[in-house]
Image 1 (tube, rainbow, N blue to C red):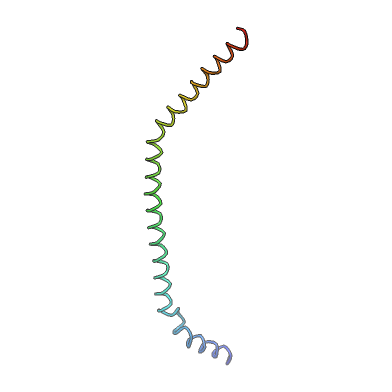
Image 2: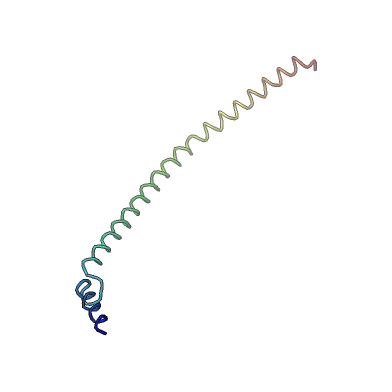
Length: 89
């Protein structure tokens, strides 16, 4: 039993009344709060930048679609002209 009491006394010397040291819990709480706030801010910034990219892409699509369509019709016209000249139809 003497070693058990000795362990209890050593524990109380290190940790106080058997609970986690109040300073450690405050420090851990501050670190967790800082990390949480930083992650929230990063998520908000990422969301805002994604909205900006999406709006830019949305404004580019009508021009991009018309360019692709124009290229396809131009290429099909050239292909039809080439085939009619070279196949003897």
